Amino acid sequence: MAPVTKEAPPAQEDPVGGVRFALLYDPDCCFCADFARWVRHRAPDVEAVTFQDPRARRWVPEEAKLRSSFHLVASGGSVESGPEALPRLAELTVGRAAGALLRLCPAPALRWAYRWVSERRWNTPPSSP
View 1 (cartoon, rainbow, N blue to C red):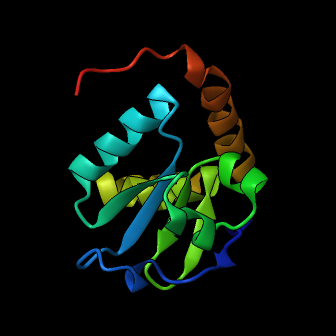
View 2 (tube, rainbow, N blue to C red):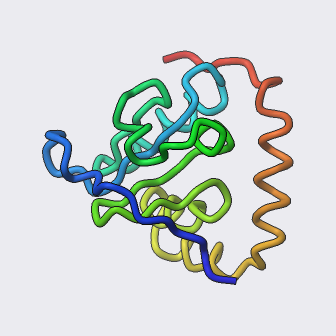
């Protein structure tokens, strides 16, 4: 099953200097904030954008959809959400082989793994900055 993408205003329209992707995340979730920090460290061309940032609503206008998962917005305007974004994030942060490996995983397996982590994310203590 191909990832479901939705066209949105391009991330590159914002004056953020060369960003190729924006990662929208929940800053109130320790796991999510740590994940965004890790992504920023590994992939400098990904800007971490909190759900409260006004740009997040422009890219994912529906409140329930915005808060349902993290979202990866490409400079071309496509939006991948939750488990559908994992292969591209793996490619950006770990390398092409990791992205290719995740693309081989059946979509139900990625959704299950994402849901499993998501349901337990509030039990994760924050890491040190």
